[in-house]
Image 1 (cartoon, helix red, strand yellow):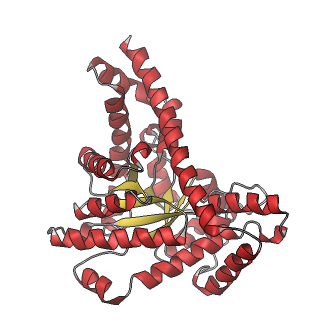
Image 2 (tube, helix red, strand yellow):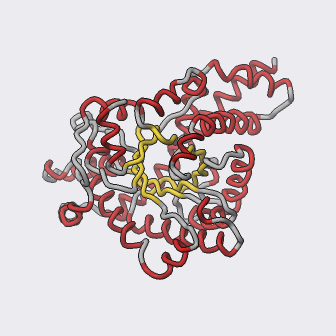
Length: 367
């Protein structure tokens, strides 16, 4: 087992793999990562599935059976993706049991085309939950304005949720409020709160990509580049600590509720000039998840220097960084708005690519 990854885990960071394919499952690669690389969870998204299905012959037999059964495109995509996630849940079942349900989690996302449709999001979340039929599943719902009531309603139905595409602090506050509303309703609906889990996926590297481009265009001080993503995430953790206090949360905690952990997403560096472990090492703090593409996981295992809590001691520095960016002309709320729209659009595009790939395969096997 990698000593560096073990040390990261011991610092309170749950290491999740930001990738999944049938090949990983069937070759034993996923199980090997769990055994040797401290991986205790998996996240998926439309981009990941699009890549897996476009390049994976291991899906052909199932597509052939579905074609023979007369399955349409939507059913075929649903069956292919839920099969992979169900099998991954089984690989991680022992981790789920060993961690009392905290880890051993696998996430599957509702169609990104539903990001602005609350009712349809809730309906699909319930379908996915029933189809996968594993207690260690998380349903991914975007933290859009329409997604927040869907988060509440899904949790209220006793379904665990991974909130995705969170970029800004005000957006994160809305997500946490949607979570606590959902937990309260779940309690009223008679659900066992100890089995209800949630993470809030706060995207990191994309914040730097957008702000760096704006700094470049404005001719601003180059020393400000590459600092916003980590500062923003650190302030999100401060908000997390502040939110889960007080009587309202204490009542739910007494009934068995678990806090919605922050999850650092988009942790692969986009700028090759930056340290390839920065979005992991600079955000080490207990009670968090870091979901990494394998390239980042390997980089941390090879040369990541874990040095204890890198978040709480830096709240003042993070606030100073955001103030410097504002003084340089960076409109934070505009940045966040752009990132949310682009995030949804990118996943919709990936979903379209996934559909095209499956359509081609379905037509070939139906001929």
